[in-house]
Length: 381
Image 1 (cartoon, rainbow, N blue to C red):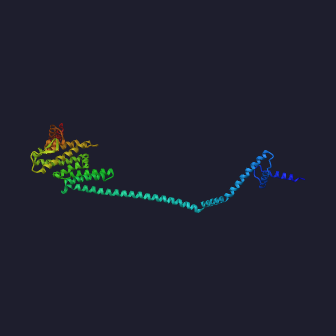
Image 2: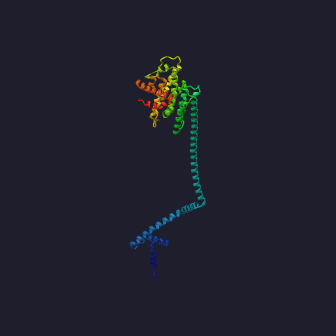
Image 3: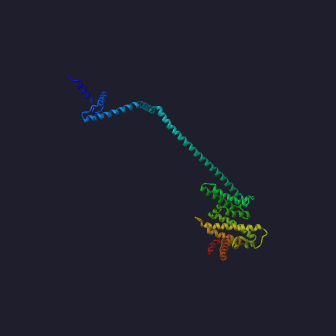
């Protein structure tokens, strides 16, 4: 029979058994361990001492975990509840519909911004186009008004030369600044030059009138469009010179002495001397304007030889212009001021003109002399 002391010793040894795999002890084992520790029972071996220390550390960790779980359990439940509710909301139809609504709202807002911007750009473009159209319409009306007024100059005695010059300058400003397209500008410039040339060439434009010859002279000085047209169209220029020839010849026939002795200063082409002072100053200005106009046309005719595609007959036109002026004025001083050259050169050239004129007259009288004329006109120059 065991004594009480032996039973107590066996009980303590059994309660010291531990789960060596996990290190977890039953609560009553923990209490017994404490009791054993409190009784200051010394371990039998060093291994048992280490095991006891390990058990104490594990017990302390378990207590801290249990205490932390107890404190945070309620908060964790709340957090899990909210997370669960959020997950349910995110998977619900209403949430998805709200997401689609948000996306649609974003796209609608972006479309509204784009539509407003596009409308602003369109309105500004339309406004610019309308202003440009209005400006073009105003310039076109101004262009046609100036051109119509200019073309009525020969039949409207109320128009002065100053007003005509102003109209020419205004036309230049309208064409250069009133139209955006370079092609349209060039077309308008060519049209102005063409219409002025046709006006001067027309039978209504009487160069015997001083105001008309002065207009032609001022048109060349004031309008680059007219000047450029005459340079690029030497045949029209030749026709205008032919009209001047007729006027000069008529004046020469009326008063040959006055026309043949009308002198120009070699150093100043704007200074003239009359052999006989005329009481009628209109005659003086008429002859001066005719001289200046003829000289301007001859100068432009000479420029026609230097364009990109010159007329092959320009040299012939210049010869005709020389002979026409010589035949209608017989004035060496004026010839030299217009065509240049020495007295001897002018005499040779004028003699040739007389020779050609005499042959032409013979051809008119005797058509059979045409062949002889062609041979005789080959005289050296």
